[in-house]
Length: 467
Image (cartoon, rainbow, N blue to C red; front, side, top):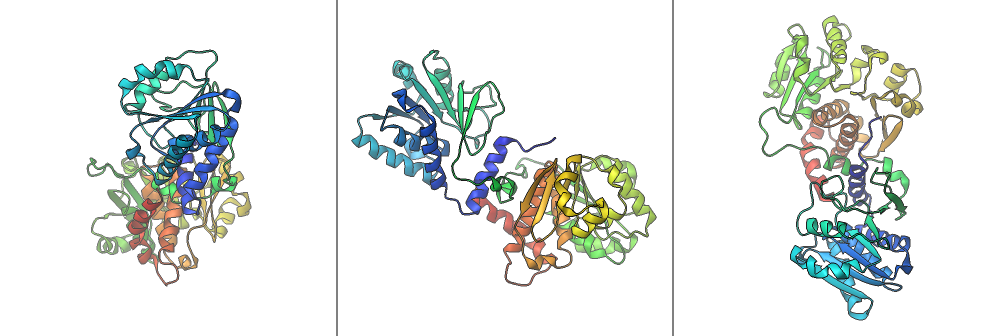
């Protein structure tokens, strides 16, 4: 079973919650209170080490709640002027006010690792150490002065000291990680180390949001590397089109081209000139001239949009594409060619309800059960359903104008373009949300598949505002 990494899932959820109207300040307050309620208030002497991000903000709030029944020292590791978010800065300002009126709250700013030597005796006297320095949004090894703080805290060995991390141990998964005995996580567990006791704090997020798509599913997809070269950002092969349905091939190809460097289209002879005129960047080959040994050159394959069942050569190529065991999106006409028994875990299927029922012989309500076989299903509808490994997700983006012809081809093209450099489930979730979100930027006005393609970049940029 392939799952989304728990820490990545948490980062996605944080972004999605903003989109759905949750206040980060509200969640930070709930997190801090939950942390304080979980920590033994009879500990008497607590040292809370906070970073300058939202993980540190949770620590600021926890200190406010703990100070009524404990002696609390907050160590800010970094410069107060560099606190990263408005929400963390707000709670830092509140904490400073509390420190002015409470004898039991002290604040120490660690701006340089050289301060640690003089602080070691004081730090060693705490009964509880709370690590609230780095959260799930940080990649790579900790930097100074946090790096030295972690080393210093790890060097303290006391049988009476309890070491707790908030959400994850700072530096988790790197060579320099805080050595804690307990983790307090918000909403859901983030680490899989069974040697560390983990408790989860309910901060008021309904569990349903864990299975709903949002901008986080797009924002955290792999993007183009600034130092990349031609071809590094993906090559997609599209096997599609017929004399009657030439537009499907065009729409899918243009959508895929928004995400990858190269789009190679294999289509019927009737479509060759149409494809070349639609976009000069397409590499176009007739079905009669395609070399089956070339499948290995591509990062992802899309089969199906506008396919004609009468073309025996096209049918053979589609079947061979599946046998190649490359990452592949199966759409539209391909459902009449592919045998369900040949599906594998690198397949993404994008049927509408009637295609689903005809292909699998079961009603769409069985989507989660069917997906246990390892492939990913994107069931298109008023509310899209995405399922893999028995787990189902819902997508609410999009509107009634997206029943216009060609929008399904755009979705298939987008998913295949994203799939070139991302895993199957993440590609399906992100592509489905982004396609609907692009449509939502034109809600209330008529639009067609061409308009939808033109809004992909705008929608992608707009999504950044939720990070």
